[in-house]
Image (cartoon, rainbow, N blue to C red; front, side, top):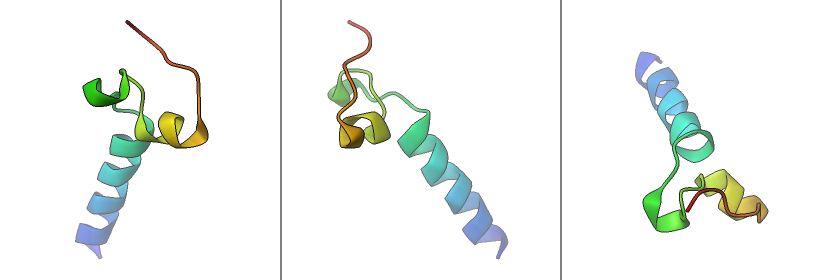
Length: 40
């Protein structure tokens, strides 16, 4: 149970908060939704 909660938090952070260099400094969620590019 504790592991599932920890992984759920990590995946949420990774997909919705952490910008990725390979995605033009957008989050995977932004790319998936087709959001406009942010950053350089």
